[in-house]
Structure formats: structure tokens, C-alpha cells
Image 1 (cartoon, one colour):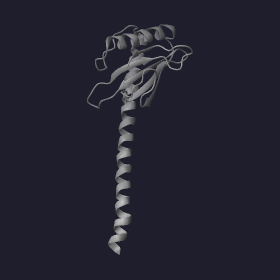
Image 2 (cartoon, one colour; image 1 turned 45 degrees about the horizontal axis):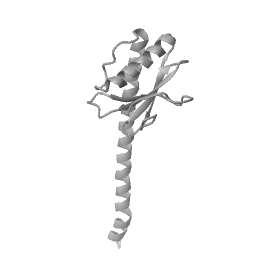
Image 3 (cartoon, one colour; image 1 turned 120 degrees about the horizontal axis):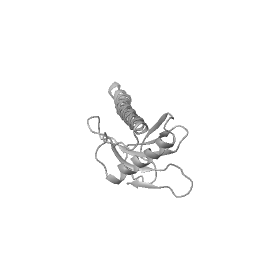
Image 4 (cartoon, one colour; image 1 turned 90 degrees about the horizontal axis):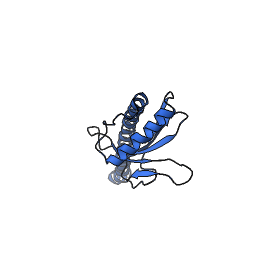
Amino acid sequence: MVRRVIRLLLIPALVIGVGLLIARAQETRLRVAGDRVRLELLQVLEAQAIEPGRPITQFAPAEIAIVEELRSRLRVAASSDGSSEATVEVRSGDSGLGSDGSATHWALIGYSGGSTIGVRVRVDGADHPIAIIGVFTPEAPGPAATVGN
């Protein structure tokens, strides 16, 4: 009788407990990766505000068109609102025009009071550089421009 009670209560409790631990670890990993994305994108924004057109080199090699599109959009944003504060909002998951599930995070970046640029990024781990896999115009009226997958 006691063994049956243990089987009926303890085993499901252990399964649920292990599942919760795995979910918590995944949530922590996504949050840490999101903080890393935010920090690196803030550094890019600040560098572009100081020196518009500066090469963006801290990310994993990406398609030239994606990096050039990001740099071009940042140059326009920095020249129009160079004195404004840089803003970065990062979310986990994949979003934006052209999203196909390959991004681990997406971010809205720009300068307060100016235009916003959407960036799709992939984080493969703490030891790997962040990869920019797409640039998009978030919720713009009319047709939105996108570069990348």
C-alpha cells in the first residue's frame, strides 16, 4: 500500500519538479542572452552617435547587405538625433518582417525621439559572437522594408 502511494505521488512530483527546473534554467539563459544583446547593441548605438558610419565589427560575420543596412539606418538616426539618448528594447523569440524562427531575440533600437530600427539576432551561446540576421522597420505605416531572412 505504501509503495503504491509513493509511486502515485512521488514519481509525478519528481517529474514536475525536474520540468520546472529545466524551464527555470531556460528562462535564465534567455534573460542572460537578452542582457548581452542589449549591451552590445547599446555599444553600437553609442559608437554610431559619436562616429556615424563606423564599421560594425563586434558581431558574428553576417551577410554584407544586412550589416550595411543596419549601419545605414543607424547613420541616418544618429545624424538626425545625435544628442538623444540611445534606447534598446530586447525580447526573446523571433519577430519582425521576414521572421522564420531562426532568431533567438529581436530588438527595437534607436535614439529617443527618433526613428526605431528592428533587429533580429541569434545568440548561439556565451562563447559565440551575436549574429545579426535581419533588419526591419517595426510597425511602419505602408510597406515595411526588410533585409535578411
